[in-house]
Length: 461
Image 1 (cartoon, helix red, strand yellow):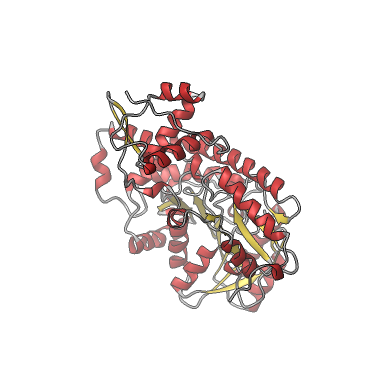
Image 2 (tube, one colour):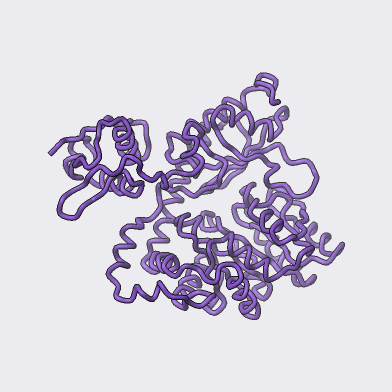
């Protein structure tokens, strides 16, 4: 058997990623040829002085990327030279020299083992059921899992009040398809999730900003906006807000629920980051369940490629929401929903959340060390930070300079509502980088730019 003894970059963290990188490099250089047998897990672990578990995880990740393949009873072999780069973020695949910290991706390295889940499903005798049309709202088993998942967010509901959707973004779309007509006024925080802006454009809704501060949406400003005009709904992200990372205090959540009830305004509560909080106050939905549409995201917390999310809604709105699912996608793919259900039921989803929290905490510590002289807002386990810029910098200029130096970030303008000036700030995603080493490099570049004046950088033309 040919022995492969890779040169490992010891600075790469976690270590299994160093093995994957070495595999990719040696395949690309021709040092490893297609169909060449690779060492066993134990042999490679002994060669590298690493734990067998580290090698096992590396081989699984390499197989997921198409770099290698395992054959039962024969061993592990080098895969195709043109392996599918699906495992890498699109932005980094297209421009590997760019460290993309602009998209608020979850931490891919901590995703669950899809191969293991598919292997378990393959032993079932009723898989043919997943090849058939299912109810628009989702199979009852999947809705029951959605109710269990919503309970993790502090929302008590039964399966009949839960709908399965293709991720939180689809959940937003079907809710606003149901609630609003073109031209209706939807209130949001003055800085809001760009995905909500996209839904508003698609459905021709009028987004209007409500003033915020360091704690989030200001209830008195919400009340004043409702007094001025007819408002259909309030959209808010009360926990680890995107982009500011604010966590809305319990007193404000209660006040917002009461104001919405007084003015007969629906509430759309998007809480995809809630499971990262330490801990969060009760959801707004717990104070106004009769008018709140709660988005319990799954993809962000567990696996981005599993496009599953859940909407917990007032019972009387379910039939209309089901019609919106029918109009947009007919139904969620039942096989995908079954994988999400499996991971909820066996505890995998909860374990993945804890792993991602731990990795996010480590990345937050890295940010504290590298950006120790910078002003920014975040939470201990958040996937992003809200970086406030020195007075001479504007967010657009800072973003351009970062891109010129090979780092992608998102300027405040992407989140702003209305025509007012955007804050001098940028969002930096800590979860988007494939490894801590790439994150360290990106943050170091940002720190270097912060130490400069815009006048010292090339002019933007």
